[in-house]
Length: 157
Image (cartoon, rainbow, N blue to C red; front, top):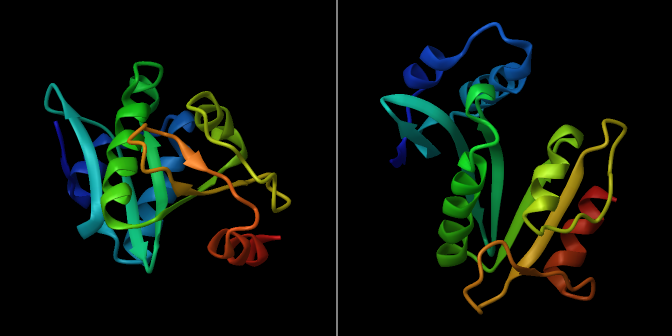
């Protein structure tokens, strides 16, 4: 079931496993930026599988955070979360923006997303595209001449 999740639910799922180190970043950023009211997650067998936080600003929907707990990876749960985020953004905005950590880029690439390349020393990737109104999940138009895309690219590169 996909629904809003709380800080308490997220904390109950965290452990000391180093493979879940991004969970601490997720928690810290949600606390710092007061994002818990926007946190969406998957609950399966009464257990939090993972979650994401997205934000609409003007014409752009940004997936700010996305995390799947290590023991739930490889089972399509990240795809389910990102699909939910994709359709939310599709209804609310004209563009989708995702900043992917270097270690997660393969996940996004496997779903068909395109990167404009690494933009910092950590190797993070920027995904920015216009929703294609053809109703195909994970499909974006990557038009370098689009004014919104150009503006966002200028912010990063």
